[in-house]
Length: 210
Image (tube, rainbow, N blue to C red; front, side, top):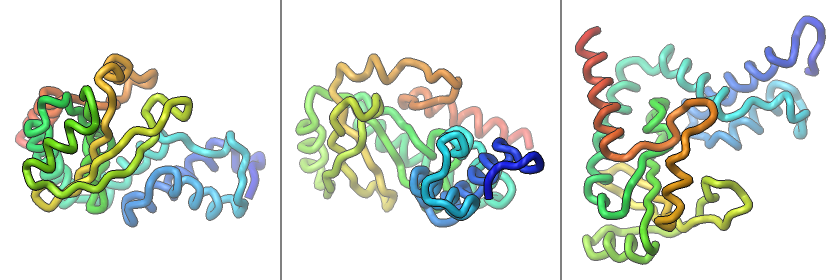
């Protein structure tokens, strides 16, 4: 299906975003995979025009709407629990300048989501040794650098923290300055432990007012 006078480009982008959001919320798909599958489902083609593809912000908004409509109290409880566990991990890793990012930060986290952190340390090996010395089993992988493809991927350690999966991207300390620059769209990209505490305090106040 391609744009017509009665079905314009923005409507198609919104439909793809909503379809991708369902895949993310229901199946735990990542944004890139969900966007590609949703576009194929809506448009019936494997390589749609770039201007038909919603960006991550549009999809995130649809995930938020989906959770508001169908998540119920279970979603709120899951998010509250993930944020509490994230704060525990961040406090434990305080010397490595931990920042929370991803679905647990933006409030769209559901049953399939894990905790995603970014650490800023003098060396990745310091973090690995810190965890291993505390008998934390880790798996090592790579994640694209938040600055984009022009930078090398960063090492990522994954582990369980009180039965919740945590993925911590390990950045050089000098990357922290770039990380703290605000996004152009005003969305929170990452917060430190103090920021997460403030966010949780606001959520608690809103719940008490309901």
